[in-house]
Length: 305
Ligand SMILES: [Zn+2]
Image 1: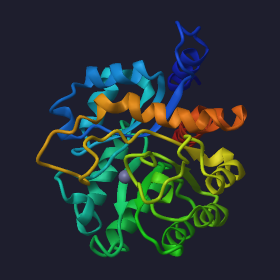
Image 2: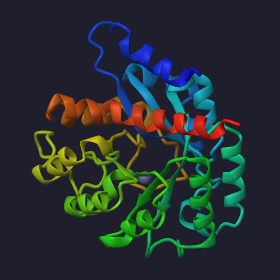
Image 3: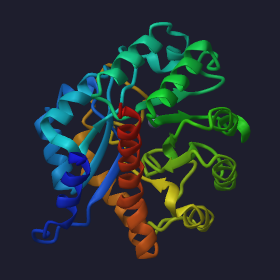
Image 4: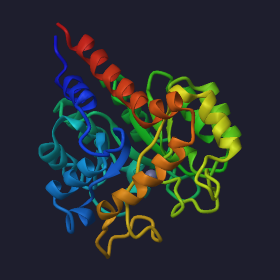
């Protein structure tokens, strides 16, 4: 059996570089929302991916189908995730929306999506999250062996570890390095849950400014570097290219994040370049390739008659 996805990636990786192209980069956190599609066509978005040598791009959208248009334009390197948001504000209420499980099921059965998310769990701000809807989505992820990209925003150390422990068969892609948590809490969570991979998207100088992961020289802060080196096989990163960044989930102005992709990717390449090269390569690329390659191989196994 051949895996066109992996074959395409491998040929991209080993193709001779033209000029001074930087090494391939896996971006596991991108969006192509309606307010981005207003100002950036799928073809333009894909040209930004190429310009930054993004070899794998995880894309989710509001509404979800927009992510599919990016795969149509960009090919196998684009992995659409299904996010069941249709309107601005759904990120706060999705765990109460009884239409969500059916829509997730239908999306996964279509074979066009490679994961679920980015889903938000913001306790204290959003409505109650531990609902039958949430549990059904976890069951679907398990049944279809689909990773779940989840954005938690809680200062409670045990909030996310409670979730990953309760759903040990779901592979979680934990967005934004756990958000506002301290690095030792992130380390404890990763120790407690082997089913958690952590990605550091949006941990740039423009977001989470009160919770930096890098110093003024662009290197990871020592306490973050320690965690990243310890779990070097389970970190990834991404741009989460949204602009302007001041307002979370704006709806009244177009989002020109794709035009800023260079800036975000360059920031991440900066701290990666300061790590030991073998660690940098894992986080920049190969952890994501393995994460998604493994997913497809496992899925192919279960799909066998
Ligand atoms: Zn997020």
